[in-house]
Image (cartoon, rainbow, N blue to C red):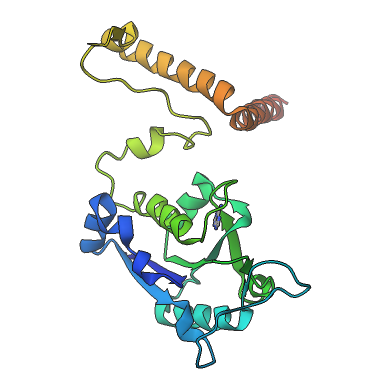
Length: 251
Ligand code: ADE
């Protein structure tokens, strides 16, 4: 199955960009994913190919028109034509923060239609009218949605079957279990007076696994208290669920 991506943008030349090389580039050559960059301006209705207008109520910047966006999305849906509906995502700092869990769902296929914003943003009416999911890649403001779209696609592509060399690196890494990944080291064993933790050179796999688990927990607690809180919340909940189940069985 080919994962199909369509990107609606004012800058189609930005694609595939970094996704044309390395892992993603090779996977595209092998037909594991496909990309169509759609010029939003092609769906303007006037001879100036206007895609935006001034914000209702006044203020700075310009807003992408809902009618132009709708024509572009309808076109993308028509050319993608799949038995399963293809999710439409709009990249915007107002969106729901992207998570590895959502990336994993999207990577199941059939693909994505990604709409990139520029200027002040999108006419709000487009989201409900075309069932568009607003997605943010973090609490930062980019000059446009294109780099965010590249990030989203990169995250999906590396999860496609046969794309990543070592499958285990997809499940042990950061976020896959709600924690940050443990730190890594490689040769030389001593570098600029700094050594590799002794346990990693012990050859004792159980001890190494325990050390990695602890590091992963400590680093998450210190660096990402938000993730740690969620992880602890889920752990406490699943433990009390297990106790409840045991009580039910015992009765
Ligand atoms: N466009 C501009 N900033 C963005 C962000 N943080 N996430 C997604 N799209 C954006």
